[in-house]
Length: 296
Image 1 (tube, rainbow, N blue to C red):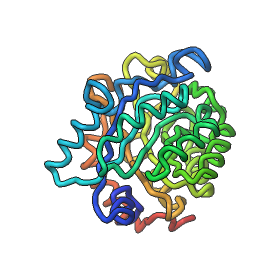
Image 2: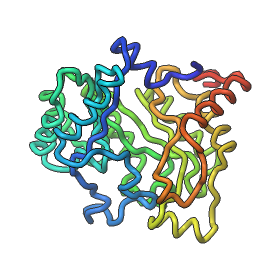
Image 3: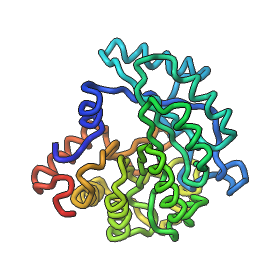
């Protein structure tokens, strides 16, 4: 492989495949409930999150473990995905994490949240209560450019993100940054500056997403006006390849391309499937002789 994938990381750390179990813990977001803003980020629609089974947290985890066992998977990472999973009382956060830890084969807790709702007291309690697990805090960076963050209504600044990373790492937790390539009005230079920050900061994990337009979002309204265009699949592959070049070789790439339900996706009409995209991208890296960190 020409890049450090999540599967490679898991096999190196645990000696075998690890299945990530997505959990909806019922939290909301300060950018939706009025504390920071309303309506969330301009691209956000909750139905774009990975589908999780209905029912309590325990049932969600149990159902997905049972399905994975039949495929020979015996280690699991619980991923609190939807919205901001440290936005609330720390006692409630601890209770909901505990509800998910129903199996001794769970080795990792991955918590999706925002940099402005991950206060030190919460980090301290997480370390105290769940220190035996590998803990990864996933934060939406999207872009290092404040002008873009304001446009997409993130409700926090790049400086907020940078500060949160320093505090999280001080507690010994892993950090995963989410980046969207192709945000409105960003050029190649701006996108690569965001990737360069992730590399220079030596973040543990990164997830790349391409921008897609979902029905009923504010981004759809902006897209309809025709003020910006989306990346084609070829353009995305090129920029992703340039990103791989400058990325720290020790940063795990947890995702290379996003996805969304086709019934609510306005554009783009690619990828046809994640597998077809990965095949194309790997062929591109081979053809261009690109590997992670080769241009850093």
